[in-house]
Image (tube, rainbow, N blue to C red; front, side, top):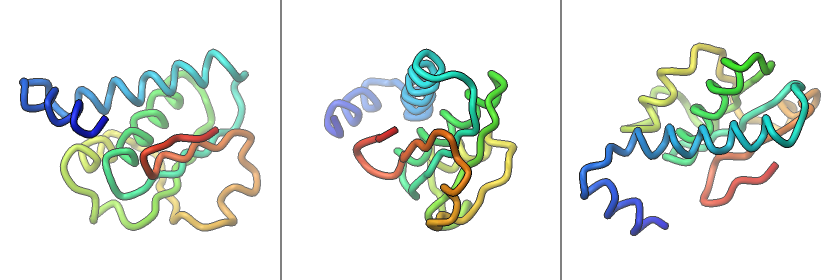
Length: 116
C-alpha cells in the first residue's frame, strides 16, 4: 500500500487528498455501523494519525461527540499529518491509558492498521 500511495502521489494526486479520502471512508463506515456515541480517535505521529484527525473532524461535523488523543505533540507532526491536525478544531489530549475510560467507540489510527 505504501508503494501504491507513493505512485499515486508521484502521479499528481496530493497526499492530503488521499488522507481526506481515507478519513472520510472511516467516518462513513463508523456512521453506518454505529449510532452516535462518544468516540475517541487515537492518533500516532505519522500519516495514519493524520487520517485519524480527518476521521475525527468529519464525525464531529456530523454531530458525533469526538475526542482526539495524540501520541506525541501536535508541533511534532509534519506534512499532510500536520495539515490534517490543523483542520481539527477540538482539543487534543495526550495519549495515555486513561483516555479510553468513557469512550463508547475507540478508533486507533496510529499504525498501518486501524481497529475499532
